[in-house]
Length: 164
Length: 250
Image (cartoon, rainbow over the protein chains, first blue to last red):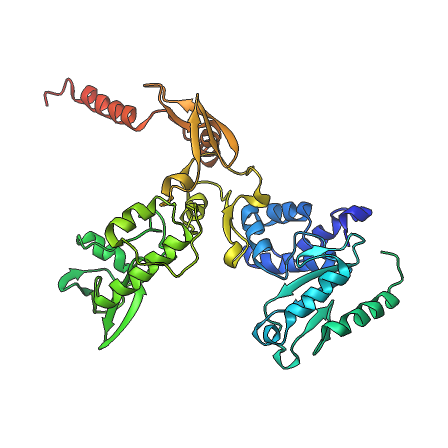
């Protein structure tokens, strides 16, 4: 969801900033809040954070590109994360990624044109007993096989009211 | 505090870093990512040494190892030499075209066949000294971005950095000569940005960028930025002394 494009402007960033003292130790928490609210970190938001905390923009960019939980590009309404940790990897998480790539026409780190799905691989979700694991928004899908994926996506689209 | 480095007794203040103690006593420890003007980074690991304390030996990066007790240090043991050779191989694989390799190959080369994948043409070994220099002397215009194999040094959004003042500290400290800085006709180009150079009022040599002068002014609004190169500054000081002592009979 592109908060800024939707005419909401940057007021939500100010609301988030107002909740934190002007101290650098809150930097990650602030970025996480913006990510949660907006689905990604808009550039305008980073500029506001820079002003608020008086840190170089380079520090923000460094953090935003370092953490997998932060994204500079808008994520899809359904953010799909495929775990590619050791346990999931040996249980063929790559096969899941291949199936998703084929079905959605996007690779890891990309978002579908309609803004509905985004795909990424993460390194370990700590749920190795459920390998291979896939997480869509906050819902975990355990022991997924490439064959099950089409069904999972179809069910999501069923829930979808279509207005994104 | 008593430290024995390679069999030589050296004195150290409590908390002083091992590398500084060794340097002061004329004992050589190789470094790549270290500048005396900046805090130790321990990213290149070339300054590793063996520290023996209470009968136990451990390998530490001397640039960030504070002396807290009486210890014995070996800077060039078989173990250290073996690890350093592996480090050189790794550094060569990551940045074979860097200027630092010339010196390394002379000291440790020729390298046996490298089982690591070599990044041909790469000059940067990602030691981070440029970022550290920019934070300390400049404005924090660059940082490391991404992580793991995609990590690199770049300005935000990989665009010409707005915050950069063109001081060139990053290029100056870079051991690999990996940051391109060009000067032509009074214009300095670095990080894809052009900066107007100001001349020394004494000899006309280009000494700093206009943005640099403005940055210094903003930091110390009361002070005046003297546009003099090091040579002319020295000359001015000497002339000042001579004038002061001219009529005193000294």
